[in-house]
Amino acid sequence: MARGQQKLQSQAKAAEKISKLKKQQGHSATEQKKAAQKALVHVCAICKAQMPDPKTYKQHFENKHPKNDLPEDLKSI
Image (tube, helix red, strand yellow):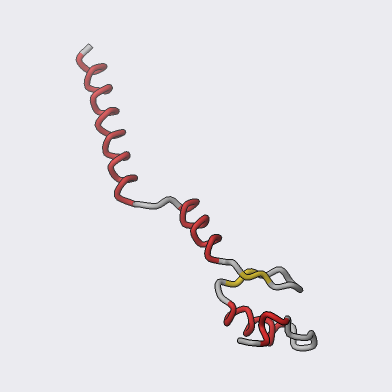
């Protein structure tokens, strides 16, 4: 019976060690993806690509859609 008790103790110790490692790692991948998605607020009207700021959006539009007219909100930038 001693081996059974040792087995339970080692399993508990291993589970505790794993939980500590997970806490040290910090944010999970899904949390990071959600935060990154919140930062992408500008959406291209033509290809639906997402950009974080209007300057990047304007650069994207000028490079990827040169034949199309620039949207009104980007002309002032």
